[in-house]
Amino acid sequence: MRSPAPTALGLLLLLLPPPPAEAAKKATPCKRCRELVDKFNRGMVDTAKKNFGGGNTAWEEKSLSKYEFSEVRLLEITEGLCGSSDFECHSLLEEHEGHLEAWWLRLKKDFPDLFEWFCVKTLKVCCSPGTYGPDCLPCQGGSQRPCSGNGHCSGDGSRQGDGSCQCHLGYQGATCSDCMDGYFSSLRNETHSICTACDESCKTCTGPSNRDCGQCAVGWAQEDGACMECDSTCVGCTGKGPGHCKECVPGYTKESGQCADVDECAGPEKACARQHENCYNTPGSFVCVCPEGFEDTEDACVQTQAPGGGEWQALAVHVRKLPAVRPEGGDGWGSGQTGGEACLWGALAVTAPWEVGPRRRVRDPGVSRRALRGLPESPRAAAAPSPEGRSVPSLHFQRPLGCVPPVSAGGLCLRGLLVACVSVSESPSSYKVAPQ
Image (cartoon, rainbow, N blue to C red; front, side, top):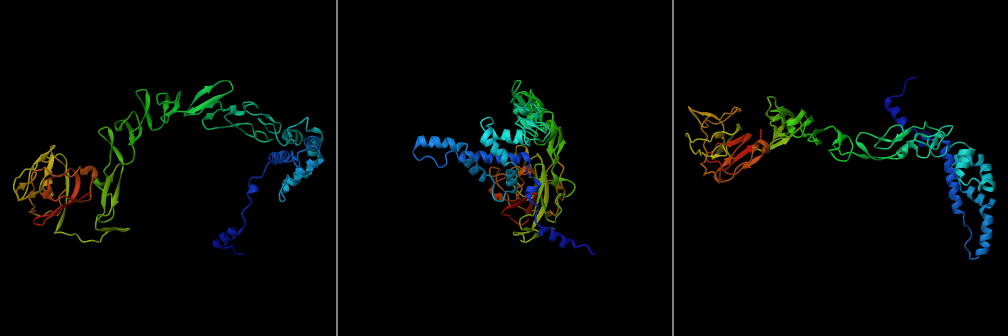
């Protein structure tokens, strides 16, 4: 005979009724007995003054005294104990109805606690609070205050369990009288203990502040008598700040004794694999984005918009505190200096060394740079006024995408690693700057 196909077998399993939840968590004999007693006690409350309150107080007091212990009242209580479909309740009541009747008629005054008499002493399916197991032994810490009041005794009040303590949060030990790591004892005597949470900087402590730490928590370190949080770039540290890291988190590397961001976009290997995709460095990571005029597809950035203006050429520039640009020839070049960094009032091409015949446009830059690609032999640009206009913020951090103001509006102070698209038309109206 062939075994059923997997699909058919799976469908068959789905159609089968799930196992009843009651089977997985079947009530213990003690729990069933306790539930029956609880219902009996509620029945006593409900019938305490039933059919009375008509105004004849003397008659009611006499009649109520008779009704209080009458079989009529007992019958009214027992008839309401079990639901019509509660088989286990009906079975338990039928089996022990004689015990309940004896307690009601003869033993109630001597044993007012029905649970203790019926479930603990008579049926012996439960234990008194604070005791456990077949012999109802005292729980850890004693039956009066099990687990020092800071936990739960296994089997408490039943004939089950082993009496061990399951401590509440913040407590530990056989009797839950000790504080766990991250907590300190704010009150303790022979019978009581209160454990209070330490400051978040502490693994162990003797008080509530970061100066009370015995040991610092992970991500914190001792400095000047207190636990101080490690810098976000650290994996473990010896003090505060990025210069005290034991190791660096992913995306950072040790440079000059501290964790510095790794510029994945400037590495020897291309960080963004898709064609035409731009790489943007972020703290500890990087993102890959299609440039303006390109559509993001699964495999590449597909151009959807033709570039406007004249002919555009790409050039790579790495500017880092260059000397001022000198007007050593060419048409329309300006010159100036701001804070010791290269400030330009002409074409962006002049921000890096490149040759036009025998001349250099920038003298002694002193930086490592990327090669210029596709730059025309003799670019021209409109001359700009003195550097009292606008400037571009540090591109090393911001890496903007878009058009900067026209050259005629003022100076462009460029810093950082960028890729610029330079218009080589006779008089460009703007320069488009985009990160590499």
